[in-house]
Structures are given as structure tokens and as C-alpha cells.
Image (cartoon, rainbow over all chains, first blue to last red; front, side, top):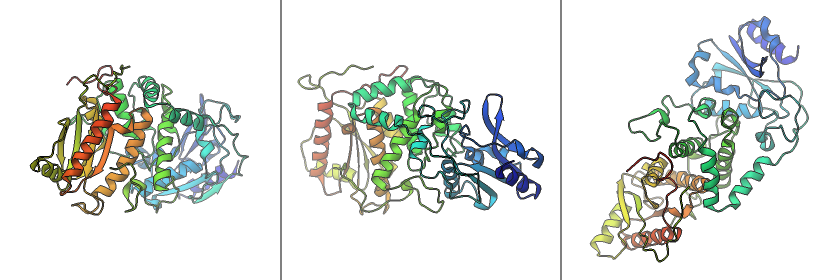
Amino acid sequence: MSEMNELAAKLLSEGTVKVVIGYEQGPAGVRPAFITDPAKAETLIFDSRCVQNLAVYLNPRRSHVVTLGKVAVIVKGCDSKAVAGLIREYQVKREDIVIIGVRCGGVVRRADMTAELTADTVSDKCQDCDVREPKFCDHLVLPLPPAPPITTRRADKIAELTKMTPDERWAYWSEQLDRCIRCHACREVCPLCTCVQCIADKNRPQWIPTSATLQGDVMWQITRVLHLAGRCVDCQECERACPLDIPLGLLTRYVAQMVEKRFDYKASDDPSVVAPMGEYRTDDEEGFIL
Amino acid sequence: MSSKTPASGTGFEPKIIAFVCTWCTYTGADLAGTSRMQMPPNVRVVRLNCSSRVNPQFVMRAFERGADGVIISGCHPGDCHYSTGNYFTRRRIAIFSELLDFVGVDSRRLTMSWVSASQGGKWRDVVSKAIANVKELGPFHQFSQVEGGEQQ
């Protein structure tokens, strides 16, 4: 039993929390686990296959999780930013949750991969990680694993795209986005998509056509990515959840880079920081305005 | 994929949608009209309460329905009728424009400007500049001719 399992068992048996959300071994890779019985706490695991962002279960759209009672959630550094985001936007109360941070040495791209981290299997998000040891948490467990292997896959792709002409970029994106079947997995898995009624589900007026045509696909992804501008924590869950392997992480990452460049803001694990699209400076750069 | 027709010499007249705030730019455009300033007739004006009313969806929909370019214009910073609306517009459109560019819509198709109620001449210049830019880029079919696109 690691200190994580002991802590989970202690929180449950003392009655501090009613449920611990963590990871367990499933039949097809690591899956989220909802532990309510202290005796079952030993099934919790954490290694480089624990890719899922469990902050999504704190999202008020998933009220069935909250009905279990007070929640303790196991978060990696990137996930702790999502929890901070939910608190920042008044979707969750800080006192209603217990945050268990785990030190993380990077994760693989898919939960069904083996735990071995190589430049090929490591997730793109881990390259730009600055919180391998979560700061925003009540408990911090497990020793810090070695740093993840280096890959420049995502940075290379963004650099390649920005060098293209707009027409070449459109050729790339129309091909990628045309595969979209509008299953909205990217929305469902996003910890920060908190709208009670999503604009994609509204039909009066219908901004986003429901059939999976390229027109609607482009409208949907641009809308989604813009709604996440300055809020996205780069957990890359949208890209991982996409059944058609559309590189959605490139879009969110690019917007995050633009937000950082223009507004000097990086996704933060401090809930008191104001998100950039909700504020302004009178001296914001406006070279693009006539 | 759409084919691009060269704009020069083909008599291409772009269709441009302008989303303007009623307090400054709309009044400025009105002044340009009452002052009998000559300007190309390619711009259709949509009058909104504030430039911060411009949801990026509006721009996307304009492109889908066949616009070749879009202008967003409001009060100068500090002059907003609602005090701070245009500061938010500025941040929002900055990011939106970058994202459109990344997806493959040339950012010159989206013009943003500040035009006050007394700047009829500036409105004429903004319109001329936007039209010149779009004429250089040619017609925009990407959003309107995609498979299953809405007929309008």
C-alpha cells in the first residue's frame, strides 16, 4: 500500500469524504475509479498510464458524482489547474472538495498503452508542463518520478502550420475537421465545459448545424476553442477522447500560446487569478486595429 | 476544396459585412453619408448596440453565408457608451483573429477598427482599406461551399 492508498482509506474511514475519485486497473487499461469503501482503497493506482483528468467529475454538469457526498479527487499538476479553474468560475466550492495531488513524471497518450514512457508514447502536454508537483492541493503524495522524455511533436506541428500559407492551413484543417462525427466527446470530457445548455445543442437560433458537415464541424471547433480561450488548462483530454483522432490539442495549444503572448497569461493553479478574457488592460496591444 | 479565382482584372466585387456599434461607428458612417463622401458600395452595415455585442459566431455565419470580408468597428478605447465594452472586444477579436488565421482564413479578411461619431472620413478609409485587402485576396468560398453548407 502506498501513501496514496493509505490516505484514501483514512479519508473514507474518518468520514472526511464519502468518495475518492482516483484511478484503477480496468480490463482495457487504467480507468477512473470511485471508491466509497475504505477497504477498496487499495485498488487505487497511479502511474504514467493515468491519463484521465478527473477534475471533469467535479463539473456541475455531472451532478450524479456530487450526490455521492463530499468528494476527494486525485489530481496531477495539469488536473489541479482544472480544479482551480472550476473554483475560479464558481462551479465548485473549495471547501466542498479535498484535493489529493500526486507528483507526476508525465503520462502516456492513451490509457491502454503500457506504462513505459518514451519520446513516442509520452503525451504532448507533458512537454509544456510546469507543475509536475501540484501546488494547489490539500495532500501531496507519492515521490517525484524522473522527468518525462522529450518530444517536440506538437511544437513542430504548430511551427509547421504557422509557416504555411492560409490556403494550405485550410487544406490541412478542412481535411482533419471533416472527419468529425460531432459526437461531442471533446465537450463531454472537458473539465471546463460547464454550460448547462451548450450552444451546440441550441436550435433557436441554431448557430451550429447538427449534421456532421464540414461547415458545422468548423463552426463547432472554433466555437469550442474560443470558449476555452484563457481557460484551457492544456490537459489535452479533448484530443485523447476524440474517436477520429483529430488533433484538437493543436488548436487549444495555439490559442493558449496567443493568449500568453498577448495577455501574458498562462493557465494557473491559483483560483484567485482572473482569467484573461474576463478582464482587460487599457494598454492592450492593438496593432491589428485600424 | 474551393478554387481560388484571381481577383485582379476579373471585376470581382467583394461582399463585406460590417458589424458596427450604434454610438460611434454607425453615427460616423452616417456622417460619411450626409457629408456625401464617395465610397465603394460593397459594405453591408449591421448595427449593434456595442462592438462587444459581436459574437465570433456572427463573423463565422457571415463567412458561411457568402461574405468575403468582415469589418468590426466600435468606439475608440475610453469612449465606449458602456464604459468598457470595446476593451473586451479588443481582447476577444485579437484571439479570434489569430485562431481564424490558424485554421486558414487570412486575417486580412477580418478588419477591426475604431471609428468615432465624428470620423466620417476615417470610416471611408476603413471601408476602402478592407475592400482593397479582400479584392487582393479574392473571393472566399471556404466556409460557404463546404459540403452540405446551408443554402442561402
